Length: 179
Image 1: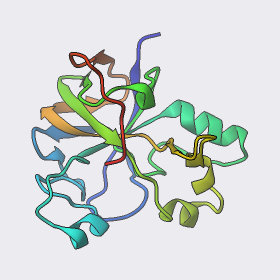
Image 2: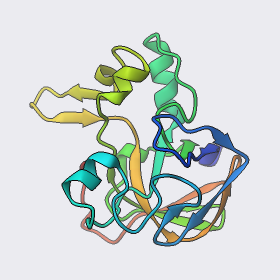
Image 3: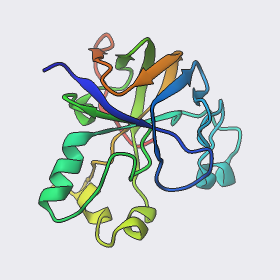
């Protein structure tokens, strides 16, 4: 089964979760049309407070539906959009992609910039959920499982059922870090 879009989401307000939409329009260099996080500079409140002129490397948030399956096994009920993603995928190992990977989704292209850094709001959504998506590794580093962030490199419409084509950047490949 090819990699595909399970669902798409947007929210014009700065809220934790995003409701499902029939389709979303990605705008090159901006993000998801009608979403509170769209813009050329950072839109996440904590980052705006630090430096509002910082380039927005978090225009689009993608989460793999397989994570939601894992959370269900651990006793959590998390539906697509609940964790604030714009695009829920299936069949793509998002967390294993290198920086600069280009995802062709529908007629749009999203370039992966890094890992989402989950915050306390996840526990506000469901108690204990943060420990499921932000876990310590044996070597002392932190494993971030809450999806990836990207920028819109080519605009277009994305909807449920669209296939996802993965194009890795030229080597050497750099691992994703939090953005």
